[in-house]
Image (cartoon, rainbow, N blue to C red; front, top):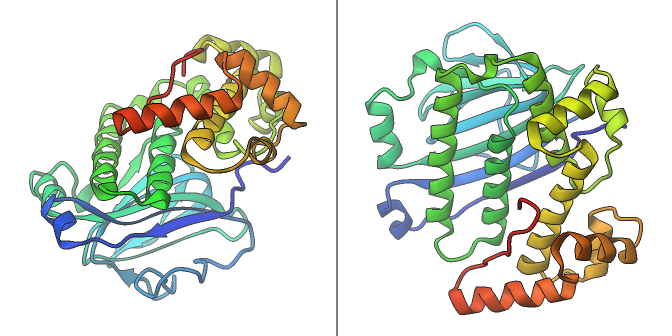
Length: 313
């Protein structure tokens, strides 16, 4: 099975004067799954972001770009091309010429977020990030993927104070990246990286079904080793962990969207609505409709969504 091929999701946001006064605002956030032998970049982006990889481009904002699959090359200003691959995150500075692209034979998966403001300027001025260290090796990190994914979801909804919510996520991403890269957490061992890679693949394929044995084969490890180490590391067998991810996504869709239970069941690739109903009730002690009602009533009463915790979520 060909995992990690989610397609393309991106959002370009409007930033008003009040948002700018906050000190940190997000202009764009997105994800691209570029298949092998596919033109890059895609043509759907506005002219300010689309670029010819041979000519490069200059942005007026900072960007974080995180690669979770594939290989490519990157170049800043007058520097020569450097190879990049899954597990790399690079930082683009405003006013800096740059270019990058995946290798044709591999493609890649790319998360990105673009932002600007006095808060980030101050962070840069105090040398927390610099042009001398723009390519960071953070390895496979599920938390980082979740932050990018959540930013995309928040941008899509685009409610009041979306910019302030996204700004918090940018700072969370920055703090996590600095911690991981500077403390060399990615060096703690190949076993952990394999498990983190598996978790990312599961997150990126939440709308599909994953066979744990096929996943182990894709990671070039034995299934018996994979199952044991995964459970030791996460507390869950791989199949159970993936099921928990699907239930968490179902909770979000029930509370935050108008999709019917049948539609959510179909979106999450359950065998049938009845199968989804049964698994959801077993995991949460709520039927999907009961959970939706509870979640929305709580959101109204507290002006925020408060989800009951069960089974570690």
